[in-house]
Image (cartoon, rainbow, N blue to C red; front, side, top):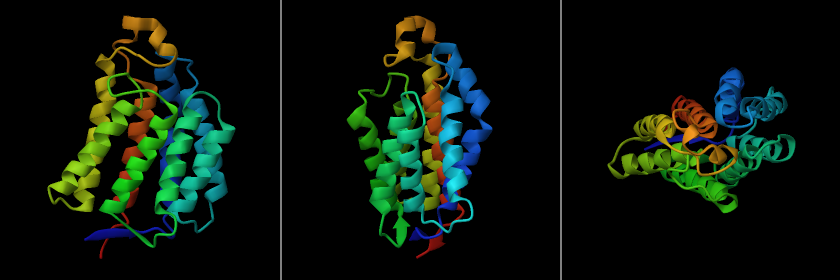
Length: 215
């Protein structure tokens, strides 16, 4: 069985932050087509602040998640701060106090984050939101582990599903948020939230895969 250590794994959040900051302009460009155009700026601000506070620390993944979640909820504007904030907070609380994380605990962590988002938002799969990347990713991970695939293989499956979910939003009409007012004019454009969610889940998967050890 493959696991990774919670302690010292806070650096994974640094790698996630790097990917978000790198994609700041791209995320804002996508958002500008059907939204406010500030998604990349807001996300880069929150993740960048978390990265600055985590640099040089030997933080656990749980502690890093909780720091990031708190900053996203309190320091960035827009609708995405609370959504991602509660997601990362739930991630952190789920693995807090655990020495090692296996595939089963990681699945519980994903579900807790998803449930946190759903507790404050009404979006469903098909509404052209981050849910369109997150839900298929979680389902793919659970499906892979149920089939007996390794933690590493399940992480790869999760990442692929998140990216496929992101791409599916091109053909969806927005049902939630400012973009919903555009109706059919929201077709043909990626959803910025689904795009950032895929970036986050892919970076998270890579970061964990690099730290997996045989139990």
